[in-house]
Image 1 (cartoon, helix red, strand yellow):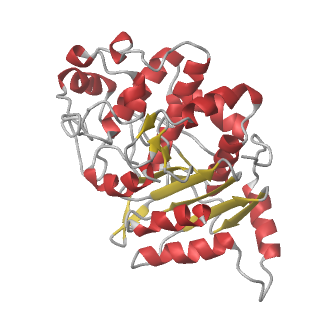
Image 2: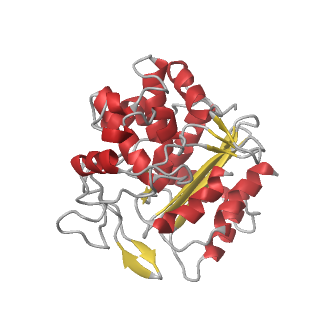
Length: 350
């Protein structure tokens, strides 16, 4: 996900550096897709792109783990790996939080330069803007200073008791650093802002504005217990992290849900088009030619990408809006090396 712990960041920073889909909003039936996939994979049939990417992906940890891949090209979806296995989306959630923000911007309920102090108690940091939160330019630290100070804290469930009140306290007291960069804490704060202005939880807002229109039939952003199966860390079972604050990494679902999200972003319905455009526009230009949208990382090649990692899971999504193509993976391991993300960036960039 990338919440709190520094182990997320190297994978995700790679993705800050790095169309015409077949109708966003068409609900995907995992059972039907699984049946179709089995029929298509006849004996001696050549592997498709998704199969090849999955095979390469599984070489990036030194033990077997569950993983699922999608590729969307030429208006066709291809899958490899389990279709009904639910995973954590981890920090891909940030793009959904940003899209919900963009919905509020599109309806003029908020502006990108709205100070956070107009929404939350922010103390000396009241002038931080929503744009700064959504592009990791606020100067807030990667993790709130008090992230591990709740009663009952454990390494196994490090965010299960971290509350909105604790986050606002940390926001009021935070010392800003212009070199701070990627901030999970900033997206926890952004999620609270969206919830307060949207008058619902992120899960409720996402269900109506993203999941249902996109046909993401099993996706959710629950508060607290997530009900996800264990993943693996160092080859041993570890639980999915439960969260009270969900803006930085609380979403989960199947590979079919992730593929439906990609199609939605490439070809949004009319009432979501303005928000998608705001979210995917390059708002910050970097000296190296790369850019940042709202949560999305935009390499100089023009792709849109985001990845996530937690103890039990890894995830990635990459879109090429010009070509109308996309690819992504969900894995039940926290041990993928950094080179795994390059497989998908390189695939769509080729």
